[in-house]
Amino acid sequence: MEEDTIELKDNEFLRQFETNIDNELIKLEYSLQERKIFLSKLTISEERRSDGTLEKFLTAIFDYILDKGRIRIVPTGKDVATFFRANKSKYSDLLPIGMNI
Image 1: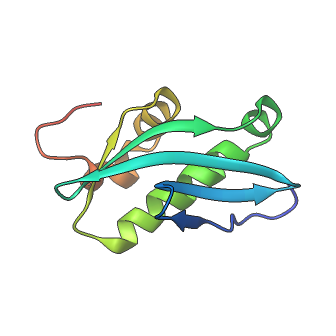
Image 2: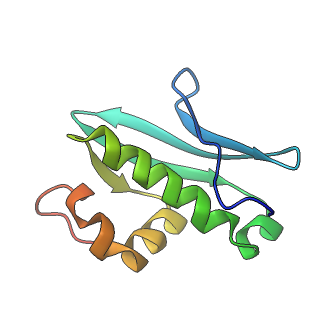
């Protein structure tokens, strides 16, 4: 990937975060319930997983949610939970009270 930033789109109609890199749609499906966002199904190629795009995409999503404020993340997908654990110090305020990852 040539750019350091991800152009993130919150597709509220389809309830997914999206980005398009080299004609590949990368997406993370979500659902909203009571000021919580459940991050579930991630669609990304193996090539993009290993070239750093996965981490940049999830960072963009977490930062977007952090900027919105007053909403908590519930990482239900394996990749999202792994990312959260690796970046817990930065995003610990996004976890609902009483929940451990």
